[in-house]
Image (cartoon, rainbow, N blue to C red; front, side):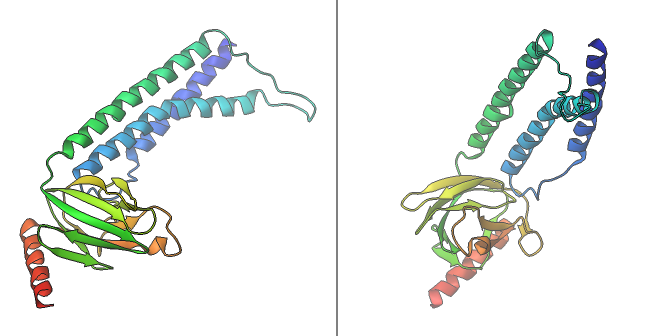
Length: 248
């Protein structure tokens, strides 16, 4: 039995090291367009790292059992190992410790950081969802856009989005910002984003306002381009919109 445990440990160590290396080299995330993106991406990567030893143990036991304890005939059961002794206790203890760690970090610590980033927004943008388009309003400037016209936002600015819907459930999500919140008829939900880094939907698909709540036939096409520009360019864009609105 000791030989089985030794072999399992070696297989587990190899699989775990390979998995950790793959997780370190893998870059699955889209563009970082907000400070919140770094928080959520770090949490996701931490969960991958913490899950790698567990994944390695499951794979090691699975393949070792298939190799060493497989049945030799259709009517014969394979050999088995009883779950007793120190191994199940260690497994339970390590699993419980990992769960407790994830609840505290990156769970509670990550939520606290996101709440801190949401304090005292610099500007408010109102967003309304309807099948199958978005309407965006800048209340302080008296500017409103809709359809496929891009939502323009200033860089290095803390923006609170107040979101609602006029018909059914939708969901607000910009991949570059990561954070998502439901758009609910009859109520206003909010999400705050610290824009960090200029970007444009024409060159980067992560800069788009996408509905992520299945809302009907045109759900997949319910998207609005997003542009994050410098503060000076944003002010110029607002003045142009105000001038056009005044002409009308």
